[in-house]
Amino acid sequence: MSGLLSSTPPPPPSSNITYVKVACHCGLNEFRAGFPTDALPISNDLCHCSACRHSSGQMAVYHVNIVSLLCADTDEPFHVDGSDGQCISNGDGDLIPYKTSENGTRYFCSACSAQLIFHSVGKLTEGGKREGAYWCVAAGALERTEGIVQPGYHIYIEDTLDGGLADHLRSIGHLKLPRYRLETGSEVLPLGWKAPHDQTKKQPEGHDIDSLHFACHCKTLRFKITRPNAQSTLPHAAFPDLLYPYDITHLAKLRNSGDVKWWLRPLNSSEQPTKYFAGHCACTYCRLTSGFEIQSWVYVPRGNILDMDGQPLTLQEVKEDELSEVQEAMKKLGVARPGASSESRTDAAAPLGTRMPGLKQYISSPGRYRESCQKCGATAFAWQAGRPDLICVAVALVDETQDGARAESWLDWCLTRVGFTEQAVSPMTVEGLTAGLRATKEEKELGKSVDDTTTIVITPDSSAPVDAIAEKDRTSVVFTLVEEVVKA
Ligand SMILES: [Zn+2]
Ligand SMILES: [Zn+2]
Ligand SMILES: [Zn+2]
Ligand SMILES: [Zn+2]
Image (tube, rainbow, N blue to C red; front, side, top):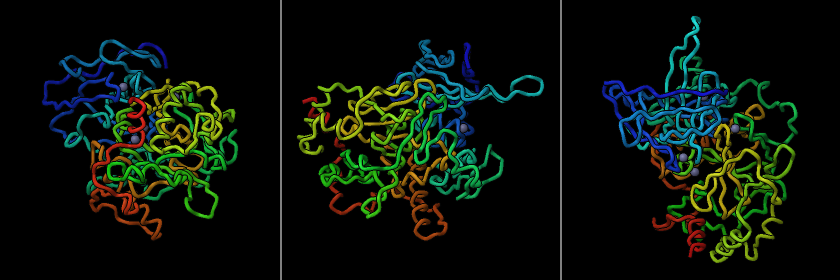
């Protein structure tokens, strides 16, 4: 895991190569990835292995093979050198390497943590040589994907124990994606496959009953969530895009003036909520700070996220005076409960403590924070200053041995929509995911399997009340307006 790596992607062969720009969200890393023109579109796997999920914070990783890597503006090779766990700055960008196995090193941006490059040194042969080395880039960071890359199949479904994201993303276009147990060519697992009961539903040693555990690959970040309780109803939050698409919904509706506790499930029922609302997001922030088109989040009140000592999570580094400014602005807009102040906010949820060690914060835009592991780069949390007590937690970090990678006894998945579909760089992938979600919903209702290969055209969630749909001029989200007021 240590020592200097001296790695440089292969120089471009003389054959015909198509170059596509790759860039992370913060722009610190920009280069061009070369694909063999004759082989386009490149069909690669969506990998569901534990190393991919826990080192990225995404439920699957989509890396595509490349034949060369050049700087963004010159035809010089883009160098990727450095030692494990340390930032490299050799003029070609700033990437932190992290080894997930003897063969494989992942490289993520030192500022925004986007996972951009994967390098395998190949497998050790009997003669002691390595064979089959290759380089990949993260498909989500490509400037364009149409005609360049296309997911072809799922691999390492076995590691999810419940099918994971593959049960939601079944087809792309008219192509049903094969679901391999391990590598390509291994046994194909049917839709709805689950690991034998003795592999799941067991509480690993030291796990308290009734909390769901999460960890990144290097285990620097470890935390747990508890079941909804009285405290879980205290946050106030605008509706998420998953429920009411921001681009077509009246701001008045988005503000959630009725103070619906939409993150608790079941909702509007006499039963006590036992689950949290979860869903997939295709927004540009998620894509470019991670490297994959689909980021899966569960919304959890801050007071229900505990560190391993049982202390509530603290993410905030917002100074008290900044906080009151934001809250003042929110009050003007009517997005906060009248009378809410920094005092009642801290009373309302968990007390402020020290930040979880090992977290790296990236501000993707003013007031929007993403938190990831400093060492392995895994995305862990996203949150906004406008609703500091409701946190997006990366589902991929869940301990799948408790209840599978989808953790369905804890999470209630949104089956009608993918968040921010309109921002997707590969509409076909997101349309395939939406079709898979809707088929899952239908199957739950009908109790039998449904064909999802009919093309889906993304339309607004038809379950949204008619008064929520407005003229198509609402591109702003609640927090954007809060920012404007603060600036003014
Ligand atoms: Zn993998
Ligand atoms: Zn970056
Ligand atoms: Zn880590
Ligand atoms: Zn997002």
